[in-house]
Amino acid sequence: MKVTIVGAGAVGASCAEYVAIKNFASEVVLLDIKEGYAEGKAMDLMQTASLNGFDTKITGSTNDYSKTANSDIAVITSGIPRKPGMTREELIGINAGIVKEVSSNLIKHSPNVTLIVVSNPMDTMTYLVHKTTGLPKNKIIGMGGALDSARFKYRLSEALDCPASDVDGMVIGGHSDTGMVPLTRLATRNSVPVKAFISEERLNQVAEDTKVGGATLTKLLGTSAWYAPGAAVSGLVQAIACDQKKMFPCSALLEGEYGLNDICIGVPVILGKDGLEKIVELKLDDAELAKMKDSAEGVKKTNGLLDV
Ligand code: NAI
Image (tube, rainbow, N blue to C red; front, top):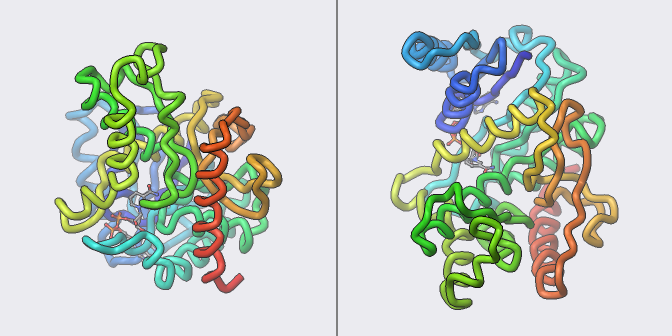
């Protein structure tokens, strides 16, 4: 199993580290446009192999796509991250050009690759890859909801004063501060609805804290986060590589599901060896469907800025 990660920056390197530690891939290629950078990150990570006990071979390349040939899965994290006070949508001008070029280069060398798009604004970048590459829809997956759901579970565990592994919850919709739809009604603690444990007011606060999860970290760190994003991407890579048939909310091209068309937005999907194998249609109530519709309008507005 060969995995390529384009963009050896904070998120790309964190993803490479988690993929290696989980020890399911034979090879990880890190590629970056900055001279020597991916090679350096790869060497540093390889020097953790004996410490962390993995066999995955990590190599680096400065923009030489021949090194990525015949990748099964490729992750696109190349592009600029946001700075404090910026929205993800403001990154579109620079990142659209990068994502278009990178996806085309990847496919030239790995025509059967499954692409995971991470660069922001992620839903719009995923849509751009659909519009410009001609890859089948099951082979293009946007990562956002897996991270937002992990942040939701973190906030729920904080509110309930219990381990995050005791709670379950999902965030669907657009991967933006205003577009996320944390499904509070369906969130559970050891299979019991969380509404049994906390007030509606506290639960609404959890949802609001989740939506600004990325912005909160960007303010603290001066740039966007990387540990949880890297871990979330590695979960998607593993589900595909190991044919886990696991459900994650991911940005998927919708053709009528949830009443939406011609848009990539976060919905639950099953990931396995064929990439995005199925879109799961949850039974949402009217309020949730209305939030999803609003969220889709926001994503479509950003898509309108693309030159496709
Ligand atoms: P970073 O600045 O640390 O790394 C980005 C890397 O991309 C840099 O090393 C840069 O040299 C490289 N790069 C730029 N143009 C390139 C090109 N044409 N070819 C190859 N490499 C190129 O940024 P970070 O923090 O890793 O974030 C990367 C992207 O991921 C940002 O757009 C950020 O907003 C997004 N992100 C998305 C998340 C999500 O949930 N979807 C979560 C966190 C970040």
